[in-house]
Amino acid sequence: MRSIISDYLTEALGAVQPDASGELAGYIPELAAADPDRLSTAFVMIDGQVYGAGDIDAEFTIQSISKPFVYALALADRGFDSVLAKVGVEPSGEAFNEISLESDTGRPRNPMINAGAITVHSLLGTEGLNADERVERVVDGLSAFAGRRLRTDEAVYASEMEHAHRNLAIAHMLRGHRILVEDARAVVDGYTRQCSVLVSTRDLAMMAATLANRGVNPLSGEQVVPEPVVRQVLSVMFSCGMYDAAGDWGTQVGIPAKSGVAGGLIGALPGQIGIAAFSPRLDSHGNSVRGVSLFERFSSDMGLHVMEVPATARATLRTSQVVGSGPHALRALQLQGAIGFAGAERIVRETVDTSYAENGVALDLTRVHSIDDVARRMLLEVVRRLTLDGHEVYLADPDSVMPAPDPGDDGRVTVVNSLDEAVAAQEGLSRGGSRPKGEGIDDAVAETAAVPPPR
Ligand code: GLN
Image (tube, rainbow, N blue to C red):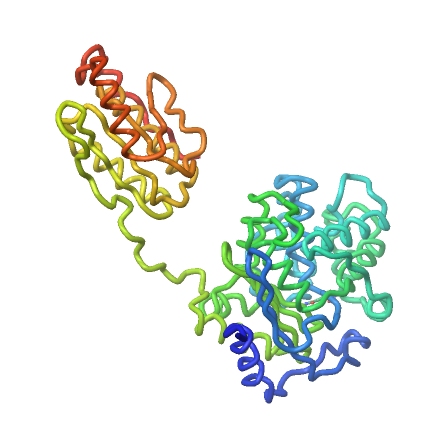
């Protein structure tokens, strides 16, 4: 059976194909000579599944789409503080090649405009790398995002360098403000090589999927950059990735994105998908005309806007019931779904509001498929307080969805595979004589123990 997703992509290409509006990037002669009719798009799911339409393996230069990835590499190499000291994160509302810096600090406003990206290029690798080593770091890093070895297009690089007056002007200005501390021309040269790295639509979708997948390349499994770096990069893409069209884009399409003047466009939807489109004719912002149309379609057809409020998750607390009978009856709270802060709050509230008559209390996680870190800490605190209240607490967790289930500080929990096991354990315990509720417990401690603050 043909995939409905490939069919959908083919149809979407057909719908935007007749639009011949827009212009090729005239200021780079090699790009101005490109075939304006090329058109392709690809989806890469975060498990690496690829869907495409058009020639998704044809190569073109990455241009400004390199900016978020190189920003990620610089953050990983130098740390947030050093990078943020030199490049801000405020949308500029200006064109990508605007010659402007923050008036007081001389910092470029963000890493997506050329001034920011040229600065970020100078921050790659360990301090003191020479120009060639820096380009090597760029190519290695972009290759890791793509999951295959990439190379530069020397003709496009040379063509852009011959006309790089504007970027040179920006770099000299940065040097004047001591944001750049080395030869301005050498940095522009490296940045221009960075822009000339050849990628295909498939590569771009894979790179975007690596961001969507918390920095792990779906094919190689490599953690290319740490998770906090990915969050930073996606946020900046969302607010600044489309330059002076970022507001329109954010409201209408709502996918963290980045465009390049060769006609590429990427979007990364956290936890779901990496998307790429390629069509060389550009609008007045320097964004691919048909690329933008494709993304508008994808977003509305498939509800991909990041601010789309998800259908209210089914209640985390599925049931609260008594299992077993007699003295070893057990209160069982059955949880379900993916548990984050709001889900864990439901369990906190339930256990605060209710005083259970049963000695045994079981949290049944059989239907839970994930617990995030804050929810884990909240649930373990619930367990600890139940123990302090004199309950014998069980965690039915056959798939170990709760990592390191240690409530600490006088808390106690028995991890079992099922409620039946919990009942049996409780039975054994009550035969051996259970600890009566509340006995021997310092209630004051229970009252005052603090909830662990979310990190
Ligand atoms: N190399 C191009 C430049 O610096 C990249 C610009 C872009 O893709 N928007 O002008």
